[in-house]
Image (tube, rainbow, N blue to C red):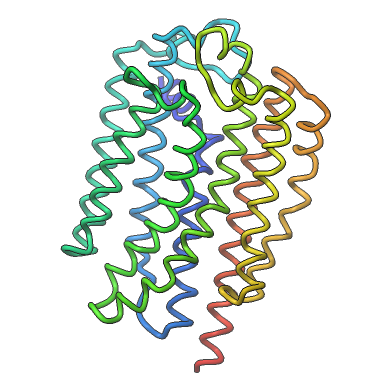
Length: 322
């Protein structure tokens, strides 16, 4: 039973939640060193990580049971096991699990709002509610996001921009007084840009998944971007997303928005070469499953190195300031 729930959470994809929160927390440390105000808040960053994981797990549970009910998951599926379709858990159990995951995420969100105070916590409250509703709407409702080609946008917003910028914003509001908060929020454009960078790799993970499943998805009316673009353009799209993930940090350094240590993120480029080659040379079906895993590893390495680079810059700036 525990293994079934573990499978339902899709652990190999949870980097999509951890990566942006790590970057948002590291950016807060860099801002603190550069701006000379209290920004980094460890408890808020950890709460943001837990909340993001719970929202993704709830979304995965909902997707598992709803795709089964819509006929998108069958015994012929090419990807990893889906617990509802495989009969490992009942639809009712997974539906309850979805509700529990989102309820726990709400509790975590209330703590973050409390730490941020009011009215500073209002945007966090709104973001949390919208994230949970969108997680349900990803597969549910008359126009589910995943079925009308909006899954990529969902991933970019909630596993990129909102996660990085939201983590950063929550720490600023939790740690600083009114005037200092205004100064801290001057770094929000950097947070948004880094959110797009991290989110691009979350989109790449989804892209590989949809490229693999596009034939079956098309048969049940699931119009993902891979179905809409076709195989060849989807492969180009995948490589463009990887390029974007690395181009943004380089651009931020070039324009002086981030310190040079951020360029350590380029150390993850070698991890992008093999999955990109496999996608470019036409891998199909189950042969894309290792590419999916490799892209998730790439995202974790990209986020880890980005965070390390930001922390190195923060340390160097604090030494200079001292």
